[in-house]
Image (cartoon, rainbow, N blue to C red; front, side, top):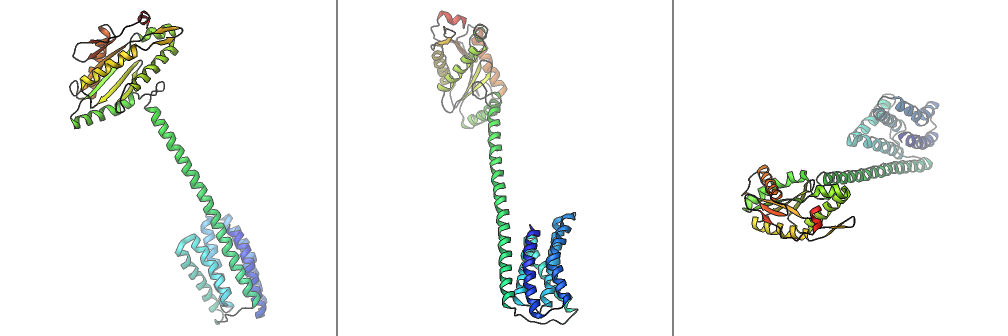
Length: 364
């Protein structure tokens, strides 16, 4: 970028100085220095920057060298206002772009050293006027330099904006993927219900909340009676169909604050926060009766599938997660051991679910 800008603007600035040298009837040495500074110099600086171990540092040194040369030219020409102003603007803008306000100070120092170098050779003079051609070309060169510089800044800003937009989109996609993975990590892939991982997170939280409010947390564990026989008779696809049906049934019969989990296999667990055990028992009874009365079609067969259910309550039946789940599981085991199709509260007598089971339910 700097090679392109320097080559074009230096050539125009060299023509500007050339017009001024022509008006001054300058010596051949001045013309030789003009060609060296404004036409050969940019190409040598570009080669130096390409071969340097640190191109950025090399480019800063080149700009400082430009500033030194511009200071020398301004002093040697008698400080013509337009030419001196254009040289100072070119030097300071470039260095500010690389080093902020330190670059501006560096531009002053570099041009000052150029002035001092000329002062050591010849007396300084002040001849601010320039001819019409030199003034017009100097204005045009300055305008072109600032326009090209602004255009390059615009292109860099546009590219940076696009890169940031792409970065934001990538971050958004990554966040969406993380959310999806987090959701998949806490959801059962078949039923879409929460899994054991989520239960391990939510159950302690709900126990703490209920303890703070002085309320009960009822836990219900249930499964389908003789579910293995359904899988063996009709296949796993039929079993999955029943699992989906039960999961939908549980979601339909529970409140928004209740939480339903697939506990494992055909076992499902429901948390009833801020719910008395008697209320949870009535709801479990209604849920099981409603599910048993819904016919299930499997391979031209109509089945009435019953449920066994175990209930326990925090803090009455356990004040820690492990004890509470263990007692809930024992209540379910009691419901199974005493004939199935029952709702059992831990430590209490089993309550038989009032269902009229079709003969085919025995196969279920």
